[in-house]
Structure formats: C-alpha cells, structure tokens
Length: 75
Ligand SMILES: [Zn+2]
Image (cartoon, rainbow, N blue to C red; front, side, top):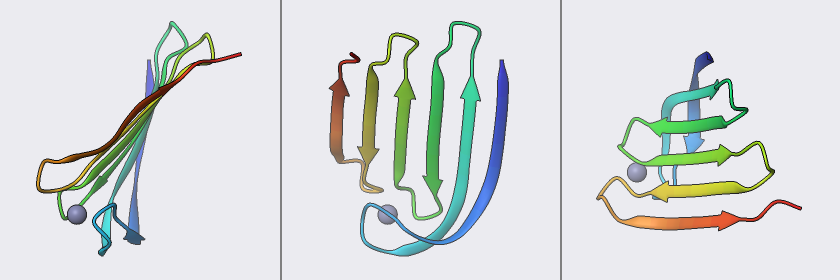
C-alpha cells in the first residue's frame, strides 16, 4: 500500500469557502485507489476507484450533511 498526502491552499470547499487543506491518495494491492480532500473547515471530498473501473464519489459538508454519495459503474 502506498499513500501520499500533500497540503493545498485556497481551494474552494464544498460549502463554498476558500480554505486550505490536505489531499491524500493511497493505492492498495487490490488496485483500489482512494483520493481524499480534507478541508480545514471540516468539509471532505472523497473518491474511490476500484480495479474494475467503478468509482465511488462522496462529498460531505462540514456540518455533517452528505452532499454527494454516488457510485458509477465501470465499463
Ligand atoms: Zn466547509
């Protein structure tokens, strides 16, 4: 499993604020790629890419409300 994380600055969070935060990406042995944006205001945005090509997308507002929770099937 490999994981990297980097800081970002002044990105537009799902709530509409411009905040700093941390972006992390990891890949496991099964080929699952997880990418997550953790905004300093508390918002989160995540994306999981499975080896079969399907993608799970999740966006959570810093008040705890789930804004997006969807899954796309791969070809
Ligand atoms: Zn926010």
